[in-house]
Structures are given as C-alpha cells and as structure tokens.
Amino acid sequence: MDIITAFISDLLELPRESVKKVSIENVEIAPEYLGRKYSRLDLKLNVDDEIVNVEIQVNYEPAFKERTLYYWAKLFSAKLKEGDEYDALEQTICVNIINFNLFDCEDFHSHFQALEKNRHEPLTDKFAYRTMDETH
Image (tube, rainbow, N blue to C red):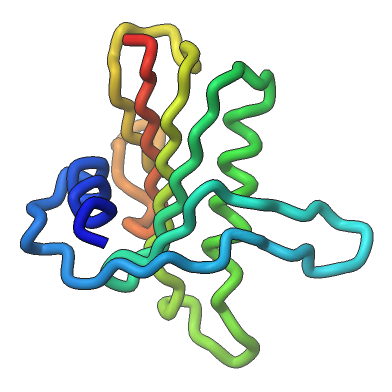
C-alpha cells in the first residue's frame, strides 16, 4: 500500500504524510436501471474520505472527455442514500493518465474544476479532474 500512497500523493500534489488512509474499492459500477450503461474503472480509491478514480488510456478515444465526466458523475452520486443531505457528498477526483494529446497545449499536467465563467469562482470543491499526458 506504500507505493499506492506515494503514487496518489504525487498525483494529487499532497505531502505523503498528509495521506492517512488509502483503500482500494470495487471498480465495477452497476447501472441504476436495467438497460443502462455499465462501467468498469481502472482503479478506484478512497483517500482520506475522498473518492479517487485513476484511469489509464493508451489509445485516443473521441469521446474521452465525456466518458471521464460520466464516470465522475456516477462516482460522485453513488454514495448518496435516500434521506442523506447533499453536503454528505464526498469530493470525487478523476485522474487520467493518457498517451495522447487531449488538449491543444504543451502542458504535461492539467487540473480542472467547475468555475464561474467571468469571476473564476469555484462552484464547489467536490469536483476535480486531472490529466497527465504521457506524450509530453
């Protein structure tokens, strides 16, 4: 587990000593209703009560951005039960390690969050999306 803790602390840019607990969780996300999309994640972790999905994608997929957002949304909403308050939702982070240019830039690492368009004010701290482009 030490190597996963080191990997996650580097990916999330956290000091290693601040990562208190890392557990590997079930990577299969069953559809809510019959006939809906079934999902399988590469690595699903719980890091200090934050959900972290690590996906590795070698080949370019045209709808990759939408796929990762779909996975994020399913993970984000999965633990909320009937009667729970919305503030009980946990921060959910998707980390994508890719072997193709997803964005038209030279950066190796991209970090996204939902921001108000003009003020750049974050909507919430519960959403994070990070991409590491191995081609740079």
